[in-house]
Every structure is written in C-alpha cells, then in structure tokens.
Length: 410
Image (cartoon, rainbow, N blue to C red; front, top):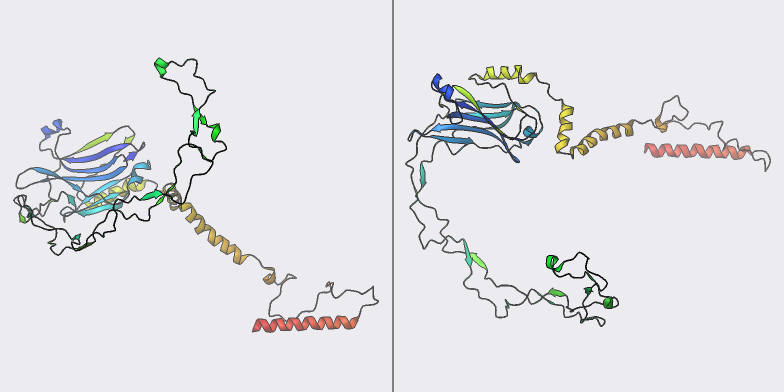
C-alpha cells in the first residue's frame, strides 16, 4: 500500500462471510466479517489492526476481539511516502504474526493476547458483595500518642516584612510614580459617546526623578523564622490494618471454553473498509492462502522485486528523524582517517635511507658534514684557524653522541 499524502485515517481489508452467490449482490458495509486487518492512522496515533469476530457458544452472539498493539514506533511506515507490505500470519496453534515489509512488529496468541479475552474468566467478583463498615484498609495512620507542642503557632505567616530595612529619606509617599501626560490631547475623532471617556497616557512623574521612589513604601518580605505551618502528627503503621478489601469470587455463569479460536467462520469474499480525507492512497496485490510457502514465493515474486535502498541510503534516511546521527557518522569515519594520517605521515628522522636526513638512533657516530659551518669556521680576525681547537671540538661531539647512545640503550 502506498500513502502519498500521509493523511490516511483508516484502511483495512475484511475477510467476509457470504453464504450464497445470491448474497454477493447485497454485499455492503453491514455484511459481517471474520477477520479485519490493516493500518490505521488517526492524528499522531499509528496502529495496525487485527480484529476477529468470535462466536460465543453460549449465546450464539459474535464479539470483536482486538489484538494488543505493539510498543514499536510505526510512524515511519505512515509518513515516508513509500509503499509497504502488510502481512498477517495465522497458525493452527492459535498464534499469529504481524509483519510490515517482512519485518515482525507484533506476535501473540489468540488465547492470551486479545482484548477482550476470547475465553471469559472462570470466576468473577461478586457484584453484591460489599466491604464491611469496620474494615480498616489504612496501611499507616497518625500517631494518636503525639500531640501538638504548645509553642507551635499555625497562624504564623510564611513571609514577614524585613525588620532591618527602613524607608529611604528621599522617598516621597504623597507623589505617584506615574502621572497623566499634561501635554497629551484627545484625538480629534474621539467620541465620548462611542469611545467612552478619554484618558491621557501615563508618564514618569518628574517630581520623582531625584527621589529614591514615590508612592506608598513597603519593606521587602523575608521568610518568617517563626513559621512552622500546619501541624501534623507523625504517621505510624496501623496495628489494625486488614489489607486491601476485595469482594469474594463467585463462578462466572458466562464462562465457556474454546481452545481453538483459530477455527473461525468460513471466508468467501474480501472487502475493504477505507476512510481517508484525501486521495492518492494506492493498494493492490491482496493474497489469501493457507500455505505459508506459497505466500513467501508470491512475496518474493512481487514485493521482493522492488529495488530496496542500500545501507548508505538507509543510514542517510535515519538522519532525517535523528539528526544527532551525523555526529556519530563524522566521528566514526573521521577518527580512523586522522589516526592513519598521524601514524603514517613521513617523519624526517625515520625517512628513506637514500635521503640525507636519514639516520637511526643506534647508528655509530658519524663525521660532520663538509658543509658544517662550525668546522669551516676561520678565525680571520685572530689569525689562522687553530687546528687544536677543532680537534677538541670534534672529540667533545663524539663523546656527547656516545653518551646519548648509552642513555638510549638504558
């Protein structure tokens, strides 16, 4: 089924009981059904209905039994504007499965997971039984041995004026903080008969511009240290507690046993119950059979031929409802790339052996390069270069490298 506008109210197909061919011409919305199954959207409520009409063997009347709704969020199936496959599997052991796009969303038993239950309870509460007047079902009670203290004042207010704050000396109590604007005039089209008495807008009182305030002065309110509120005695366990009263149970005269609700009324037609506010609700390919393998092959030959979205498309589609997934994607993809670059980026200290900068920490001391400016330094200002000083300098360098190698090996 394909919902293009996302405004479907209800769509169910009904497996209908029609006894004779002559009754097919009278098929209408009042024709009794055996099973009703299909999606339902009402506001923000999304459901997949599975309803059976079960015959009461005592009265002969038929009652509707509804499968309990799953906890799975079904909103995506109603709002993604894509076609979906709705499947109901009923088994002879009275179990059922509900699938959407071959994904299980609900399963249960006709004997245990229908509302109301197929079989009524064996016993029910006696409607004529009443709770005794002296039945005490209070688990905890006020302690009768505790009395209110004499100094407990229940009338003390929660807030009192702050006694440490006094009215500022520049406060003007006989002036209002706002006064009518003396320069304002009524609009020329103002009619007192139609608009009522005109009142000038209020402006700040100029007399209060240099004062701490105008109008009646009131100190701020602070919590009352003497406030205790209404006194209540402490609660204790009730020594006379008798538990929660329940009426006695009596045999249910409406009880019956039907251990095979799977054996329903025969089905001879398929009808549709469709209620929608707009069009563009498309459906086709309704299959009803008693062989699960045939249903699976038919599904593969029809629904299975459609092109399903790949893993990348599904991941991108998931971000529409959960934008925070973008952070997970960036972290999952970016972290390995950063680590790879950090560990594999070429290091001059450990580069290719054919480069001038290549060396190892465990190599023997190497002679200085001929281009070393420190070796070719000539003391032109002090005369010819001193060969003795150069030899000492080279010996000191060799000693430092040897010390460095010892430290590395340690």
